[in-house]
Image: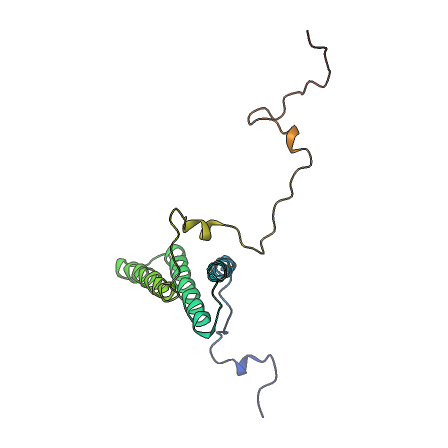
Length: 157
């Protein structure tokens, strides 16, 4: 008879597939933004996303996730000796190189004057946007917050 549901005796290793460690939600957001950017680039280029393109996109995203997690662990883990730090750094570089190979397989043209970093710096398509102020024109220049505003109207000379 198997262990009851939720019983720790049935636990084999504690790892779950498809979920990232606690505190790494930004990795998922970054990967989703990268996936959307690659898919948009293919669509703008007039290409369909077939099985080969989908596999290349997925591989690129997995390698980027690998790099981001290795970068996080390098930053967060204390007490690493220099060899371990170099190993993490090597994994980051290798993951970036492999990601770039996946992107090269997609054969996307590089538009002159395009800023590839804007893709990674741009907010996600699904990210909430800040509400705009209805009185944006009433905003005071920087450094003048808290200064009184002249609300009286005087005739022009």
